[in-house]
Image (tube, rainbow, N blue to C red; front, side):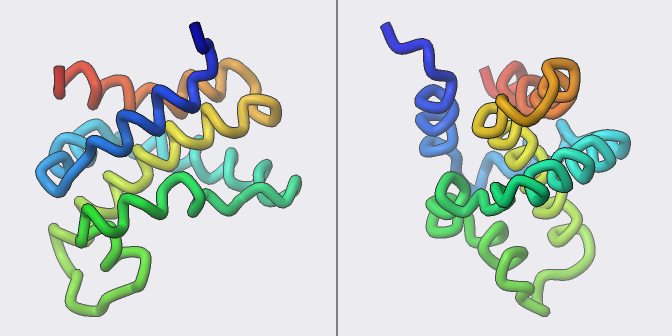
Amino acid sequence: MDDDPRAALEARLASLGPGDLPALAAAWKPAFSHELAAAHLVLAEHERGDLSHVLGPLLDRIPRIAALITEDELLTGAPLEEAQRALEVLEGAVVAVHAADLVPAERRESLQRPWRAFLREAA
């Protein structure tokens, strides 16, 4: 049995679609953004800040995330905010799993909390 959490995360990410954006965004909390920003700084210090190898495939399946990444000026207001929040939840899950060696356990838990809330709601 494979205990690598990356495979389970990537399988779940592969199942996401546009209909998941509202639930992903709803799992986001303001304090979470601060935790994620701190984690991104740690990743950048270790030159591991590029998450596109994991999140890139979502761009083809979820146009609003793609529009956010490409800074499409047509994405504004509530749809923009929803996409931003959803992407942060996804980034938190990815950082917690793919950078487990750089992020302390308590911070990993904080980064995964919104993702886990989404998974509970989606179940």
